[in-house]
Length: 439
Image (cartoon, rainbow, N blue to C red; front, side):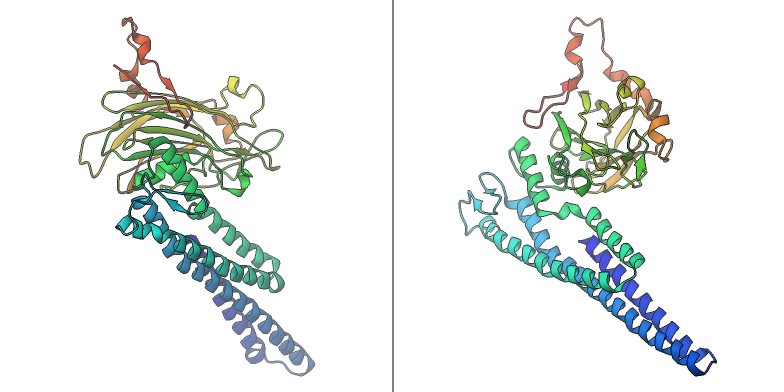
């Protein structure tokens, strides 16, 4: 909803600038220039026509701003209420079908029953607001298409597309599918900020239009929970808009570091949910500049220490990489250790370190149970250019606590049962393996 409000504000600002410019042009022609005769009349007639046209464009932008603001206002409340109901009241045996029919309620007069009975009305209100304001936004855009110069229309279209990319996480189908993915593993719907972030990473679908419906590749493994440590979120992302490959270039993530990153806007994300005891690695589809889409399958394995520390070894290849890329080291790979530390349970603090490739950029954040986050490790790619993957993927460097953090995980080969501590490969969300605890 914040994205819609940004479009509204932006459209209103454009309208104000256009009105100001039209007034300046009109007063300059009519009042400031000392000329007479046919030339003056011709210039004044043109100024009158252009001011009328510019004011019509400004009105269309005002209409777009009002429609976007109305959508943000009228959709925010039902969406927040729907989320709250799912968080607090959709608890087994209660379930919500795809058509929003609620079943499993034992007492409709209870607080849960009363809130669940509101669900259909809230969904109807949300759909109604979407239809009402969507039509008005479409009409304003149609007016702009007729009236506005191509450059101005392109800027407006980009602003709306940016908004859709910035706020796709409020999509009802995406929310519902995330709930189902979480419930498949834990037997209950998400009910906390930590739960919702895990649910979002587990969502088996892709929603960004560039992915054309091709799903991500998701692998998971259970770990021993460490209550109070919240969730640790890591993303490997390409900062450039596109990067070198053959025969076509690949689309990047076209962004900077973002503490609230969408798990779709990265090449690979890894979450360590210490509250629920789960590791998730999600590799998003690769997209070429010619529009082809394909997803690779990450190879990930993990170990855990009795103190909760987790070592994750990962190797994720571009689905469009030329043959032999894995042999030359042109994959995103490395080893990272996430280690909890003691402290105030309300302000959990992990440390991270290991060895990773020089490309792409890596960001790691930790969120407490209330959803408040802090940066753990930020490591920019060695090169943000389009040739970054070609020259930097085969090289590695240490980050954070470095390779020293690997020491506690090393096998004791004098132990006849040393193989029991071998890393556990992550598996399917439908049947998650349990990560070995190194003894």
